[in-house]
Length: 108
Image 1 (cartoon, one colour):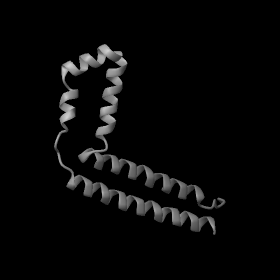
Image 2 (cartoon, helix red, strand yellow):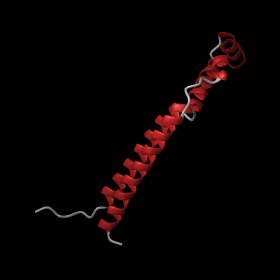
Image 3 (tube, rainbow, N blue to C red):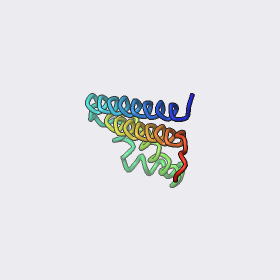
Image 4 (tube, rainbow, N blue to C red):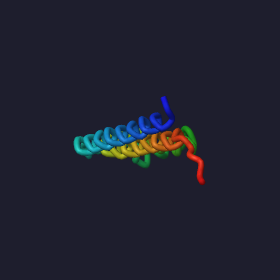
């Protein structure tokens, strides 16, 4: 298979990934509910934060906040944004790979 054919195939894959990913993100965005989780209200409480800091220190509070933020990316409308960003990254990677596969033509 020639290099220009490989580059064309990678460009088609990049376009396909972008199309499917954006459609999936749009479907998730439309169908997602905006309900807040009950555990988020508990974790935001001052007593919970205090007890967590007493047991694990400031690092435990920071890691708990990071863990809750990261977990929130995979539910509801933030999942649509996460899908969109990951789709753009994957499509851009495929497109860059296609540009690297193109044959180099000498300049005159």
